[in-house]
Length: 445
Ligand code: GAP
Image (tube, rainbow, N blue to C red; front, side, top):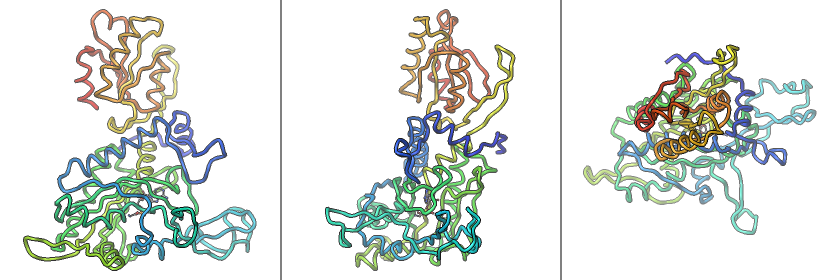
């Protein structure tokens, strides 16, 4: 689907996010803290809708995936087995002159600082583990040291046997989880794109070693394509980049990065990977516990092959905001003057507010009461809001937060029981009998 929309800058998105209460800098009154963000009232619902849309598709609408929720802090051995203690490193370089810090892989040359332009001021690359450390109990020594998880996946791997036994599942089947992860990123940036605390939605899908593993991988790539398309992300701003053998870890048979064209360029939203038996093997080796699967039917014992889909929920939420953004010049019906309209064209399931209800005049109690009643009546079926004030401003505010439908209660409503319903995208209004609103809206949301 080609989507002709005005392109937005990150400055516009950040300003809109703050103005309308989607996203704030964390601890703003203390000057903020790099790489952390807070979701305001609308942002919290937006992100929850993104997570619900993922959970609905990946868990609830399938009979081969079960849900899971593991702890953020795990036994430190987890991170030795997973390879994070030994390998989850970035190299950082500091400029001794301007104090700017860089990731070594972001610098083309070590000659000259790209920030202040001085030569000979960059330090040698220093290795830095990205896991956030914490300590359990009152003593901070090496015995109490552990980490905040850098991915949710390991909680699933170490519980593989607990889950398949209690859920009575047999490969092929998956375990899904949404939760916080932490990485001590050297250079957080691009708003909520690269942060130090973020949420991941991970599906770990275990398949038998029967030669169909690559077909399962393809199936998951297709399923994830459909998800983004179902929720309206513009096809031309989304790409599925297949990793070459050199770009993938040695144990991975295939890998695809899902990328979105942000205002600064392409950025990764999700990685889909065929990880072989690497993760379960690693935990079996270090723990000495058996995580293989015994198939009663064939009497065969095997370690299932893993297909993983790991999506960032903050990045997907940011994608929904950026992708929905549009601005257009319209003629004001009353004054005839041209005005600019900013509109977020969210998918109705993603929109934080789905229906706004207003009285035409706030000083007419009959209109106010009728509008309030309509809003209350629709509340169990949609995310609604009641507001009052200048009509043009009411519509503008709802357009800017992406509300698909606005209902206006006017004098005719008092006579014949109809209201006007205005569509966000077409700005067309139609008269609908108030008693049929529930059906009218549920068909369109
Ligand atoms: N278990 C596999 C895994 O964690 P990953 O590619 O490192 O794979 C998956 O991370 C997704 O998590 C990324 O595609 C991204 O959406 C999100 N993510 C990773 N680091 C992030 C960060 N610093 N800030 C926000 N999201 C991040």
